[in-house]
Length: 330
Image (cartoon, rainbow, N blue to C red; front, side):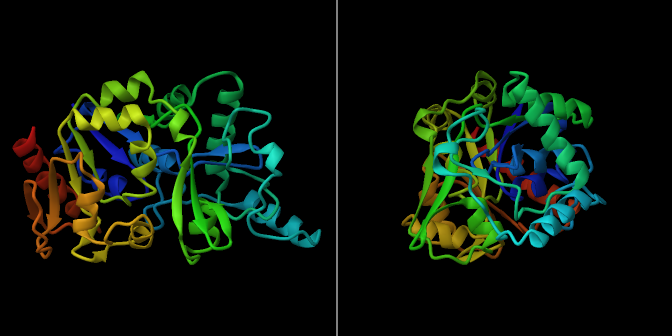
Protein backbone atom coordinates (compact mmCIF):
# COMPACT_ATOMS: atom_id res chain seq x y z
CA UNK A 1 0.00 0.00 0.00
CA UNK A 2 1.08 3.57 -0.79
CA UNK A 3 -0.41 6.82 0.52
CA UNK A 4 -0.34 10.10 -1.40
CA UNK A 5 -0.72 13.52 0.18
CA UNK A 6 -2.69 15.82 -2.12
CA UNK A 7 -3.18 19.56 -2.20
CA UNK A 8 -3.74 21.70 -5.26
CA UNK A 9 -3.27 19.98 -8.61
CA UNK A 10 0.21 18.43 -8.33
CA UNK A 11 -0.71 15.06 -6.87
CA UNK A 12 -3.88 14.60 -8.99
CA UNK A 13 -1.80 15.29 -12.10
CA UNK A 14 0.70 12.67 -10.96
CA UNK A 15 -2.04 10.14 -10.23
CA UNK A 16 -3.64 10.72 -13.64
CA UNK A 17 -1.07 8.44 -15.26
CA UNK A 18 0.05 6.33 -12.32
CA UNK A 19 -2.45 3.45 -12.35
CA UNK A 20 0.00 0.94 -13.83
CA UNK A 21 2.67 1.91 -11.30
CA UNK A 22 0.45 2.45 -8.26
CA UNK A 23 -2.85 0.56 -8.79
CA UNK A 24 -5.84 2.47 -7.34
CA UNK A 25 -6.82 -0.49 -5.16
CA UNK A 26 -3.41 -0.25 -3.48
CA UNK A 27 -3.31 3.52 -2.98
CA UNK A 28 -4.88 5.97 -0.55
CA UNK A 29 -5.01 9.73 -0.97
CA UNK A 30 -5.09 12.05 2.04
CA UNK A 31 -6.35 15.43 0.82
CA UNK A 32 -5.81 18.89 2.24
CA UNK A 33 -8.90 20.56 3.71
CA UNK A 34 -7.31 23.86 4.73
CA UNK A 35 -8.65 25.32 1.45
CA UNK A 36 -12.26 24.36 2.22
CA UNK A 37 -14.86 27.10 2.47
CA UNK A 38 -18.52 27.33 3.36
CA UNK A 39 -20.11 29.28 0.52
CA UNK A 40 -23.79 30.12 0.73
CA UNK A 41 -24.24 27.45 3.41
CA UNK A 42 -22.56 24.70 1.35
CA UNK A 43 -19.24 23.13 2.25
CA UNK A 44 -16.87 23.28 -0.73
CA UNK A 45 -13.77 21.03 -0.48
CA UNK A 46 -11.63 21.93 -3.51
CA UNK A 47 -8.69 19.56 -2.96
CA UNK A 48 -10.85 16.62 -1.88
CA UNK A 49 -13.10 17.15 -4.90
CA UNK A 50 -10.24 17.39 -7.39
CA UNK A 51 -9.11 13.96 -6.17
CA UNK A 52 -12.64 12.55 -6.29
CA UNK A 53 -13.34 13.90 -9.77
CA UNK A 54 -9.96 12.74 -11.11
CA UNK A 55 -10.43 9.23 -9.75
CA UNK A 56 -14.05 9.21 -10.97
CA UNK A 57 -12.90 10.29 -14.46
CA UNK A 58 -15.10 13.40 -14.55
CA UNK A 59 -12.51 16.09 -13.73
CA UNK A 60 -12.15 19.07 -16.07
CA UNK A 61 -8.46 18.60 -16.86
CA UNK A 62 -8.25 21.87 -18.77
CA UNK A 63 -8.68 23.79 -15.52
CA UNK A 64 -8.07 20.97 -12.98
CA UNK A 65 -11.13 22.29 -11.19
CA UNK A 66 -14.76 21.18 -11.35
CA UNK A 67 -16.54 18.68 -13.56
CA UNK A 68 -15.81 18.32 -17.26
CA UNK A 69 -18.58 19.78 -19.44
CA UNK A 70 -20.48 21.19 -16.46
CA UNK A 71 -22.96 24.02 -16.89
CA UNK A 72 -23.07 26.95 -14.48
CA UNK A 73 -26.55 28.43 -14.71
CA UNK A 74 -26.96 28.71 -10.94
CA UNK A 75 -23.57 30.38 -10.53
CA UNK A 76 -24.28 32.88 -13.28
CA UNK A 77 -27.78 33.70 -12.04
CA UNK A 78 -26.57 34.26 -8.47
CA UNK A 79 -24.11 36.80 -9.85
CA UNK A 80 -26.83 38.38 -12.01
CA UNK A 81 -29.14 38.80 -9.02
CA UNK A 82 -26.36 40.40 -6.98
CA UNK A 83 -25.60 42.87 -9.77
CA UNK A 84 -29.29 43.75 -10.27
CA UNK A 85 -29.69 44.29 -6.54
CA UNK A 86 -26.67 46.59 -6.44
CA UNK A 87 -24.85 44.38 -3.95
CA UNK A 88 -21.09 44.52 -3.69
CA UNK A 89 -19.41 41.67 -5.54
CA UNK A 90 -16.36 39.69 -4.55
CA UNK A 91 -15.78 37.74 -1.35
CA UNK A 92 -18.30 38.59 1.35
CA UNK A 93 -17.41 37.01 4.69
CA UNK A 94 -20.23 36.33 7.09
CA UNK A 95 -20.05 38.48 10.25
CA UNK A 96 -17.38 37.53 12.79
CA UNK A 97 -19.94 36.16 15.24
CA UNK A 98 -21.20 33.81 12.51
CA UNK A 99 -17.80 32.38 11.68
CA UNK A 100 -17.93 29.82 14.48
CA UNK A 101 -21.66 29.81 15.26
CA UNK A 102 -24.34 27.50 13.94
CA UNK A 103 -23.61 24.34 11.99
CA UNK A 104 -20.17 22.84 12.57
CA UNK A 105 -19.10 22.92 8.93
CA UNK A 106 -16.24 25.29 8.27
CA UNK A 107 -15.16 27.54 11.14
CA UNK A 108 -13.38 30.78 10.15
CA UNK A 109 -14.08 30.36 6.44
CA UNK A 110 -17.71 31.25 5.91
CA UNK A 111 -18.76 33.32 2.91
CA UNK A 112 -22.09 34.57 1.59
CA UNK A 113 -23.12 33.34 -1.86
CA UNK A 114 -23.89 36.95 -2.73
CA UNK A 115 -21.07 37.97 -5.05
CA UNK A 116 -20.05 34.33 -5.44
CA UNK A 117 -16.34 34.51 -6.26
CA UNK A 118 -15.59 30.84 -6.89
CA UNK A 119 -16.77 29.33 -10.18
CA UNK A 120 -19.03 26.41 -9.27
CA UNK A 121 -20.78 24.37 -11.95
CA UNK A 122 -24.24 22.93 -11.52
CA UNK A 123 -23.22 19.28 -11.10
CA UNK A 124 -20.31 20.42 -8.94
CA UNK A 125 -22.81 22.27 -6.74
CA UNK A 126 -24.83 19.07 -6.43
CA UNK A 127 -21.75 17.49 -4.87
CA UNK A 128 -21.60 20.29 -2.30
CA UNK A 129 -25.34 20.05 -1.59
CA UNK A 130 -25.03 16.30 -1.00
CA UNK A 131 -21.90 16.65 1.16
CA UNK A 132 -23.42 19.38 3.32
CA UNK A 133 -26.66 17.44 3.74
CA UNK A 134 -24.72 14.34 4.81
CA UNK A 135 -22.89 16.43 7.39
CA UNK A 136 -26.23 17.81 8.58
CA UNK A 137 -27.34 14.19 8.99
CA UNK A 138 -24.39 13.73 11.40
CA UNK A 139 -22.05 11.94 9.04
CA UNK A 140 -18.41 12.93 9.40
CA UNK A 141 -16.53 14.52 6.51
CA UNK A 142 -14.64 11.24 6.11
CA UNK A 143 -17.90 9.31 5.83
CA UNK A 144 -19.41 11.86 3.44
CA UNK A 145 -16.32 11.66 1.22
CA UNK A 146 -16.57 7.86 1.08
CA UNK A 147 -20.25 8.06 0.17
CA UNK A 148 -19.52 10.53 -2.62
CA UNK A 149 -16.64 8.37 -3.82
CA UNK A 150 -18.94 5.36 -4.04
CA UNK A 151 -21.50 7.41 -5.97
CA UNK A 152 -18.82 8.52 -8.45
CA UNK A 153 -17.40 5.04 -8.93
CA UNK A 154 -14.06 5.91 -7.36
CA UNK A 155 -11.82 2.87 -6.84
CA UNK A 156 -9.16 4.65 -4.77
CA UNK A 157 -9.53 5.48 -1.07
CA UNK A 158 -9.74 9.27 -0.65
CA UNK A 159 -9.63 10.73 2.84
CA UNK A 160 -9.88 14.30 4.11
CA UNK A 161 -6.90 15.10 6.33
CA UNK A 162 -9.19 15.66 9.35
CA UNK A 163 -12.85 15.84 10.30
CA UNK A 164 -12.01 19.03 12.23
CA UNK A 165 -11.91 22.55 10.78
CA UNK A 166 -8.53 23.93 9.74
CA UNK A 167 -8.47 27.18 7.78
CA UNK A 168 -5.49 28.43 5.75
CA UNK A 169 -5.37 32.15 6.51
CA UNK A 170 -3.02 34.42 4.56
CA UNK A 171 -1.92 37.49 6.53
CA UNK A 172 -1.38 40.57 4.35
CA UNK A 173 -0.75 44.29 5.00
CA UNK A 174 -4.48 44.77 4.37
CA UNK A 175 -5.42 42.19 6.97
CA UNK A 176 -6.01 38.43 7.10
CA UNK A 177 -7.87 36.66 4.31
CA UNK A 178 -8.73 33.06 3.60
CA UNK A 179 -6.49 31.38 1.04
CA UNK A 180 -9.38 31.17 -1.44
CA UNK A 181 -9.83 34.94 -1.32
CA UNK A 182 -6.07 35.42 -1.75
CA UNK A 183 -5.70 32.98 -4.64
CA UNK A 184 -9.07 32.86 -6.42
CA UNK A 185 -10.59 36.29 -5.83
CA UNK A 186 -7.37 38.30 -5.77
CA UNK A 187 -5.23 36.19 -8.14
CA UNK A 188 -2.51 35.77 -5.52
CA UNK A 189 -1.53 39.43 -5.85
CA UNK A 190 -1.56 40.68 -2.22
CA UNK A 191 1.74 40.90 -0.38
CA UNK A 192 2.04 38.01 2.07
CA UNK A 193 3.36 38.56 5.59
CA UNK A 194 2.72 35.06 6.93
CA UNK A 195 0.39 32.07 6.69
CA UNK A 196 -1.64 30.67 9.58
CA UNK A 197 -3.37 27.29 9.81
CA UNK A 198 -6.14 28.29 12.14
CA UNK A 199 -7.53 25.42 14.19
CA UNK A 200 -4.66 23.03 13.46
CA UNK A 201 -3.52 23.04 17.08
CA UNK A 202 -6.85 21.51 18.13
CA UNK A 203 -7.44 19.32 15.07
CA UNK A 204 -6.75 15.59 14.95
CA UNK A 205 -6.22 13.12 12.17
CA UNK A 206 -8.81 10.38 11.90
CA UNK A 207 -7.92 6.77 12.60
CA UNK A 208 -8.25 6.14 8.85
CA UNK A 209 -5.65 8.82 8.07
CA UNK A 210 -3.25 7.55 10.72
CA UNK A 211 -3.63 4.03 9.37
CA UNK A 212 -2.92 5.30 5.85
CA UNK A 213 0.17 7.14 7.06
CA UNK A 214 1.65 3.91 8.42
CA UNK A 215 2.35 3.02 4.77
CA UNK A 216 5.06 4.70 2.65
CA UNK A 217 4.00 8.22 1.67
CA UNK A 218 4.34 10.17 -1.58
CA UNK A 219 3.98 13.95 -1.85
CA UNK A 220 3.33 15.16 -5.36
CA UNK A 221 4.70 18.46 -6.70
CA UNK A 222 2.51 20.45 -4.34
CA UNK A 223 2.83 23.84 -2.67
CA UNK A 224 4.64 23.08 0.62
CA UNK A 225 2.91 25.90 2.47
CA UNK A 226 -0.82 25.86 1.73
CA UNK A 227 -1.19 22.41 0.14
CA UNK A 228 0.88 20.29 2.54
CA UNK A 229 1.38 22.75 5.41
CA UNK A 230 -2.16 22.38 6.81
CA UNK A 231 -1.56 18.63 7.15
CA UNK A 232 1.84 18.84 8.80
CA UNK A 233 0.47 21.51 11.17
CA UNK A 234 -1.64 18.76 12.77
CA UNK A 235 0.53 17.17 15.45
CA UNK A 236 -0.38 13.52 14.91
CA UNK A 237 0.06 13.79 11.13
CA UNK A 238 3.51 15.35 11.62
CA UNK A 239 4.44 12.59 14.05
CA UNK A 240 3.25 9.89 11.66
CA UNK A 241 5.30 11.32 8.79
CA UNK A 242 8.41 11.21 10.97
CA UNK A 243 7.94 7.45 11.36
CA UNK A 244 7.28 6.32 7.79
CA UNK A 245 9.25 6.48 4.51
CA UNK A 246 8.35 9.62 2.56
CA UNK A 247 9.25 10.63 -1.01
CA UNK A 248 8.43 14.07 -2.42
CA UNK A 249 8.42 15.42 -5.97
CA UNK A 250 9.74 18.98 -6.06
CA UNK A 251 7.37 21.60 -7.50
CA UNK A 252 10.48 23.59 -8.53
CA UNK A 253 13.29 23.21 -11.02
CA UNK A 254 15.98 24.87 -8.92
CA UNK A 255 14.37 28.30 -8.33
CA UNK A 256 11.66 28.08 -11.01
CA UNK A 257 8.26 26.94 -9.79
CA UNK A 258 6.02 24.99 -12.16
CA UNK A 259 2.83 26.85 -11.23
CA UNK A 260 0.89 28.51 -8.44
CA UNK A 261 1.87 30.74 -5.51
CA UNK A 262 4.39 28.39 -3.87
CA UNK A 263 7.37 30.72 -4.34
CA UNK A 264 5.60 33.73 -2.82
CA UNK A 265 4.24 31.79 0.14
CA UNK A 266 7.52 30.00 0.86
CA UNK A 267 9.42 33.30 0.91
CA UNK A 268 6.86 34.74 3.34
CA UNK A 269 7.41 31.78 5.65
CA UNK A 270 11.19 32.14 5.58
CA UNK A 271 12.05 29.42 3.06
CA UNK A 272 14.09 29.97 -0.08
CA UNK A 273 11.65 29.63 -3.01
CA UNK A 274 13.51 26.76 -4.63
CA UNK A 275 14.06 23.01 -4.50
CA UNK A 276 16.50 23.60 -1.64
CA UNK A 277 13.77 25.48 0.20
CA UNK A 278 11.33 22.62 -0.35
CA UNK A 279 13.83 20.24 1.24
CA UNK A 280 14.16 22.61 4.20
CA UNK A 281 10.38 22.76 4.55
CA UNK A 282 10.19 18.94 4.47
CA UNK A 283 12.64 17.66 7.13
CA UNK A 284 10.55 14.48 7.37
CA UNK A 285 11.07 13.57 3.69
CA UNK A 286 13.54 10.75 3.13
CA UNK A 287 14.02 11.03 -0.64
CA UNK A 288 13.21 13.36 -3.52
CA UNK A 289 12.32 13.21 -7.19
CA UNK A 290 13.82 16.19 -9.02
CA UNK A 291 13.72 17.33 -12.59
CA UNK A 292 16.69 16.20 -14.69
CA UNK A 293 17.54 19.87 -15.27
CA UNK A 294 17.63 20.58 -11.52
CA UNK A 295 21.21 20.61 -10.27
CA UNK A 296 20.30 21.14 -6.62
CA UNK A 297 22.51 19.01 -4.36
CA UNK A 298 20.41 17.61 -1.51
CA UNK A 299 21.54 15.67 1.54
CA UNK A 300 18.98 12.92 0.88
CA UNK A 301 18.60 10.28 -1.85
CA UNK A 302 17.50 11.80 -5.14
CA UNK A 303 16.07 10.38 -8.36
CA UNK A 304 15.98 12.61 -11.44
CA UNK A 305 13.65 12.55 -14.43
CA UNK A 306 11.68 14.98 -16.55
CA UNK A 307 9.08 16.06 -13.96
CA UNK A 308 6.76 17.77 -16.45
CA UNK A 309 3.16 16.63 -15.91
CA UNK A 310 1.39 17.78 -19.06
CA UNK A 311 0.14 14.34 -20.15
CA UNK A 312 -0.72 10.95 -18.69
CA UNK A 313 2.50 9.63 -20.22
CA UNK A 314 4.42 12.30 -18.32
CA UNK A 315 2.67 11.27 -15.12
CA UNK A 316 3.55 7.60 -15.68
CA UNK A 317 7.21 8.53 -16.14
CA UNK A 318 7.27 10.56 -12.91
CA UNK A 319 5.40 7.79 -11.08
CA UNK A 320 8.12 5.31 -12.09
CA UNK A 321 10.74 7.69 -10.69
CA UNK A 322 8.73 7.93 -7.46
CA UNK A 323 8.65 4.14 -7.20
CA UNK A 324 12.41 4.02 -7.72
CA UNK A 325 12.90 6.57 -4.94
CA UNK A 326 10.63 4.61 -2.62
CA UNK A 327 12.68 1.48 -3.23
CA UNK A 328 15.76 3.39 -2.07
CA UNK A 329 14.28 4.82 1.15
CA UNK A 330 11.70 2.19 2.18
